[in-house]
Length: 552
Image 1 (cartoon, rainbow, N blue to C red):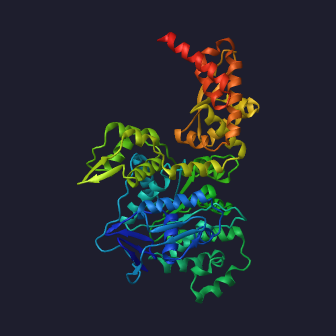
Image 2 (image 1 turned 90 degrees about the vertical axis):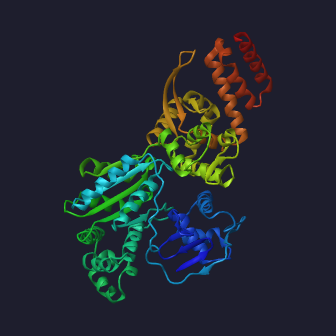
Image 3 (image 1 turned 180 degrees about the vertical axis):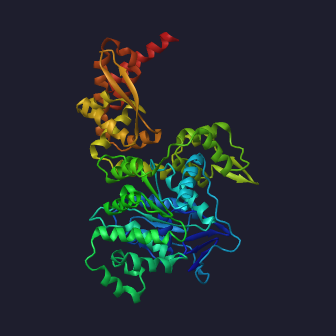
C-alpha cells in the first residue's frame, strides 16, 4: 500500500520512502519503526508495543530505540513523530491513501546513489567476489569493523550496484536474543524476501522439492495445497538433514541466475545459522552463490564466540574473504563534505574540526553533520552552504546519537570493564595502567590483562607503549580510541566514586615521583582539586605557578 504524508510517500509493501520524487535512504530498523507507526496513525504506541512488533519482543535498551528514532527524525524532520514522555510515541502527520501497492520503482526514477568515501578497495573486493560467484564458484565474504565504521553502508552501496544489474540480492538481520535463542531467524527472513521477489514461485517450488524438512518449519512460505505433502516428507528429519536440504535448495535456485545473500550482525546470530554458514563454505559443488556476512570486530574476535572459530576456519581453509573496515582518512572526510555540500564555503578550520572530532568514524561524521544542519549551524542559501556559527561551536558539539551509540557499547561490557574505562577517563585520554590499578585498588597485572583483552577485541583502547617513573617502576600506557569515548566514560561514574579515584591517583603519583613531585605539580593539583582536597590542591597549584614563573 502506498501512503502519503506530504512531502513524503511510503510504500509499505516494497519498503520504500520518497520525499517528492527523491527516494530516501533509511536503515532497516528505523524504517520498521516508521512502518508500524504509520500503520497506527494518531494512536499512542507504547514503548513495549513497539519492541513487540519491531524487535519481536527482544529486550532492547531505551537508548537504542531513541537512537533509531533520532535517525528517523533526521530524515522526516520534527513534528511527524511525537514523543509522549514516559509512555511512547505517536505518528502525528496527516495520512492519505495513494492507491495500490507499487511493485517497482516509479518510472524513470533511478536507484539512489549513496555517498560513500574511502571504501574503493573494499568495494572492489566485493565486486571481484561476485564475479567469481557469477562464474559458478561460491563465495563467502566477512565484513568486520567497529560499530559506526560503515559496514552496512558498504554492503548497501554494493547491493545498489547489483540492483541496477537486476541481480537477485536479499538480506536477513540477526538480532540479539536475551531469552532462549530461536534458530535461523535471519535465514527465515532471507527466505521470506526470496519468496516475495520476482522468483517467488521458483523459491516455493525449490523448498518443497529439495528442502521439505526446513519448509515444514516455515509453512507460511509454502502454498496451502502443498503443506500436507511437505509435512509428510519432513517426518523423521534431523537438524543436519534440514540444513543440507536448505543449502541444496538455495544452490538449485542459483543455477538459473546468481543469488546474493546478506546476513547482518552475525555477532548476534544463533549457533544454527553459524553452523549453516560453515557448511555452505565447505561444500565443493559449483554454485552461483555469494554470501556476505557483517559483524562487529570486537565480538567476532572473541575467542569464545563460535563466529570467531568458523570465520577463521573458512578464511584459512575454504577461501572465504575477510574485509576488515578501518577508519577513513582525513582526506576522505574532506571529500565527503565536498560531495555532500557541493559549492560550500566552509572555513578550513571547520573541516579540520569535523575530522578531529569524528576521528574518521563514518557514523560519527554523518551524525555530527546531520545535527549541525538540524540546529541551523550549517545552512544552504542560494545554492551555497555556509557555516552560521563559529568553528569553536562546532568543535564543542557532540551528537546525541553518537554518545548513545557509545553508551550502548559500554553497557555490553562487564561491570569490571566499565569501571576500568571510567577510571581511565578520569586520568585522561592517555593513561598509565598503574594509576588505574591504584584507583581501583586492584593488582596491576590484572588491570594490564584486562586492557590487553579490550584491545584484542577492538574495544575502546589502543596500546601506547611503556613509561618509566622516577621510582624505577615501568608501566604500560594506553589511550582511548576516541575523545568521545573518554567524554562518555567520564559522565558515567558516580561523583563520590570519582572523588575517591582522584584521591588515590594523586597519592600514587606522589609516591612514584617522590622528591621530583614538583615536576607534576599541575597534574597533582588537578586530581586533588577534583578529589575535594582543596588545601592540598592549593599547595600544588602554588608550586606549579612558581615553576611557571621561573621558566618565564
